[in-house]
Amino acid sequence: STFRIEETILELAHEVTIVIVTHNMQQASRVSDETAFFSMDDDRAGYLVETGPTAEMFTNPKQALTEGYIQGRFG
Image 1: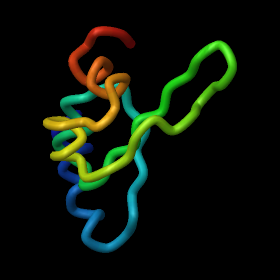
Image 2: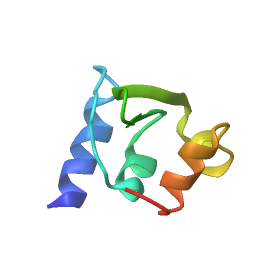
Image 3: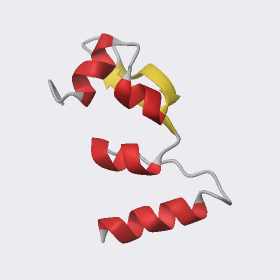
Image 4: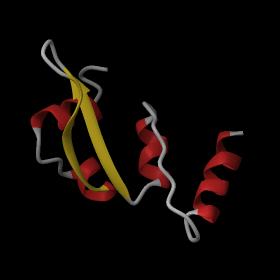
C-alpha cells in the first residue's frame, strides 16, 4: 500500500503541489523535491530548522540538528 500511495503522489505532483508530513525518512527522500525539517524545544514547538532540496538535505544538511535527526540519533 505504501508503494501505491507513493506512486499516486508522484503522478499527481506533475499537476498540483502536494505537502506531506511524515516521520518516515525513506519515504520523504523518495517522493519529495523539497524538504523542510521542523523541531521543538522547551521554549518553542514546531519551529523551522532547515529547508532545501531533498537530495541536499539528506546528503549534506546545513544544520547539526537536521543531520542528527536524519541519521537517527533522536526522534
